[in-house]
Image 1 (cartoon, helix red, strand yellow):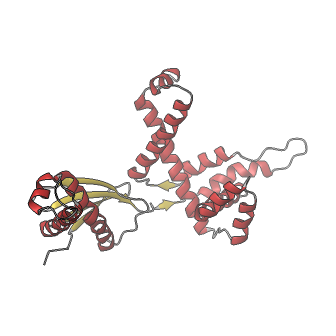
Image 2: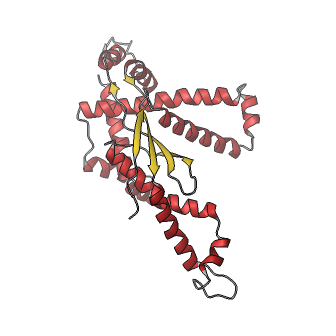
Image 3: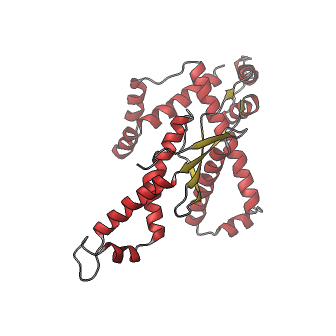
Length: 280
């Protein structure tokens, strides 16, 4: 019987990034390889033979080993990852970044999976820091009323006040998303990336560094809001979700919101948490 146990080790980086190193035993790989080849032979069509009736040897000679490897990985890799997650009792919040390391024929296969959990958030003295700004607008002097602090002011105070070790894999993912969004906007203007960079006196490295800082701050602020919502027991009830759905600009937008109710509830909860901060 093939060995289906997939040994794994876990490594945690200081920023909270988790790397799982997983081994796929040769016995499991060989068994799955045989299953994949059998399936391919059954569905193969060669001149002079009905589908699935060609001699196995003739079919195997024409099979692409790279394709077989891909199919084997599709079958064994996801389950091996799930088993490693259960074994090490971790709760990933993103899909893993997979890196296949060794796929030697007849030997154990090895791959790594990079992921992360919700990072630890230390809110420190954020209330006192936010109150230093919000208190100014609460001092009423006729004719000299001060405006409430802007969202940008509160965000800056929160970023400076709280402590969050943001996993690099989250930052990398957000940087790629921001760059992809920018490239789409540049393309819609009929410009190339080089033309855009020249017009803003930046190079690719500077742009990526700028987006990296933005990504770190955005993610840090988002997790801080989540932590505050948990501590202050800020929640969203069904009535608030219904009201938000009713405010949709058209039927199409309402259907999109209904299909992503969890995301809508999260946005509403964030807004309520921001209102909480503004009212400190």
